[in-house]
Length: 631
Image (cartoon, rainbow, N blue to C red; front, side, top):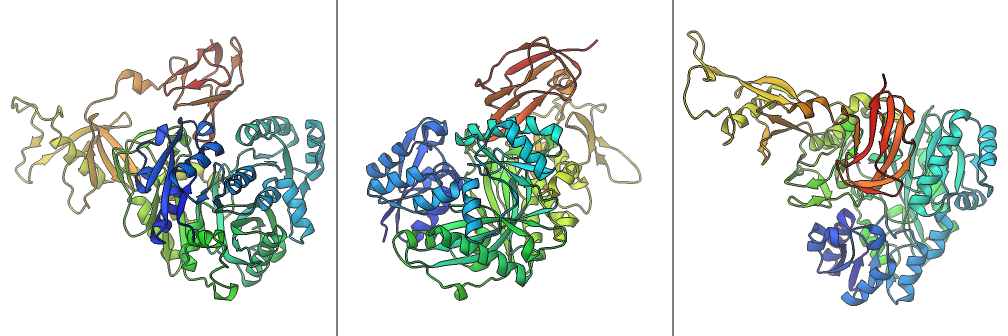
C-alpha cells in the first residue's frame, strides 16, 4: 500500500485528498506557491514544500518542481487533483519515470481522450454515439467557416484541447462566426497552448449528463451512475446533482453502457468522467444522448456521486493506483437518495460575476450539509487561481429534500468582505423551473436578470442593521452632548417610544427601526471600515451611517477613466487611441481567476488614450483607458 502521498494541487481538492489519506493512515505532503504560504491545505498536510512564485506557470504547473518536492519529502505517490497537471500525459510519465506511483489513469488514456477531435473519432469507432460536427485537421478560418455553414447555425466552436468551457463559443449566425472563432482560438491558445478547434451541431435544449466510471489494472470497468450538470454559466458548471432528474431506466442503461464502452476502448484505469450532451426537447431519450468528451481525472462534482453511492472515490483511486482490483462489482454498487452540489465562488453576480479578492475577515459555512472548503476564516482570496472557495453538498431521500436543504445552506452562508455567489445559488435552487427538473444548459442565461438581482433586505435585516448602528462605538449616531433635537427616541402619549435610524445601502438612504416585533434576528458584523454588515439569503448587506462621497455616488467611469475592477492580465485590446466608440462597445479584455472579462465603453465617445497593452499585468483600480464623451 502507498505510504505517503503528495498532492500536486491546492485548495479544496488538496484538502479533500488529505482527509481520505489521513483516514487510511497514509502520510500527506502539500506543495504551495509563495501566495499560498499560509493556505489551509498547507496546514492540513504532514509536510509542505514551497515550489515557486504565485503564478501557476512558475509553481503548480511546473512538473519538475513537483517531482523534486516529492523526492525531498519522501513521498512515494503523487495525486494530481483536478486542473493544473491532472490531465497532462507527459507529467504522468515523468512521475512514473521518477519511480513514483501516479494516482491517475495511464498516460496513453490521457492522450487518447485529451484531444476532443481524436477522442470523438475513437468513440465513434467503439460504437459510442457522438455529436454531429466537424473534426477535420484543416484549421484555416475560411474552411472552418464553410464547415459551420454546412452544419447550420447555431453551431458550437470548441477547443480541441479544451476543458472547463475555455475556447468554447456558441455562434448564432454566419455573420458572427469570424469574431467568435478569433476569440475562441485566442482563449484556447492562452489556456492550453493549442488554438485548434472543432465544430459541433448546437443542440437547442441541451442537458449535460455525465457518468462516473472507474477502471482497474485487472481489466475491470464499472460505472457509478450519472450526474446532471446542466446548470451552467459561460459553460462553467454551477450546480450539479445525482442522479439526473427525469432519467428513465432505458436512458440510464444506454448512457452508462456507452460510458463503460468508452473507458474500455482506452484501457482506462482509475477515476474518469464520460460527458454526454442530451437533447432535452422531449425528455431524456436513449437515442438522443451523444458523447462529448472524457475527463481523465476526478471531477469537482464527485461528492454528489459519493453521497448517492456511499463510496469514497479518492480511496478507490488510491487502492487502484496501488494495484488492487476495484472494491466492488457493478451489481454491488447501489444508488440511494439524491444529492445536489453548489459551487461557492468568490465573485459578484450583481456586477457581471466579477471575481472578488481580499482577506476573509468573516467566513462562516452552514452546518447540516457537507462543506468542502479550500479556505478558512483569516485566509485570503488571491487573483492567481480559480475563484471557487468551497462546495456545499446536500443529500436527501428525495430530490426535493436535497434541494431544500442546500437552498437553506446557501441562504446561511456568511462571507465578508469578499463577495460570493451564495445568494445567486440560493435563487437558482429555488427557481420553479429548476425544482420541476425543467433544465437545460441555457437555464441560467434565460433567467440571468432575476437570478443575479438580490431581494431587498427584509424588515428583520433592517432592524438588525439599525441595532448594529446604535451600538457601533464610532457611530455619529452616538452624540456626546445630549440634545432634544438630536434625540432619536420619540416621545408619544399613546404608544411606546420608537427609535428610527437613517442608514445608507448602496448609496441610498433607508429608515430602519432597531426592533421589529415578530422578526427573526439576523447575523450582524461591524467591520473596521464602519460598515454594519447584515447577512441574509446568502447576501451581505453593507449599511453605512453616513452618505457616500460624491465620487462614489457618481460611479467609477463617470470621468471617462476605465479602471480595472480587479487584478488581472490584459489579453486583448479592441480599440485604438482616437477611435470613436459606442456605449457598450468592448474596449479591452482582462483575464483573472482563469476567466476573461470584457471592459466596455460606459457612454458614446472617443478613446482619448490607452494606458495598457496586451500582456500587461494590472492592479485593481488601475486606469486602463480614458474616454471623452461625444458632443
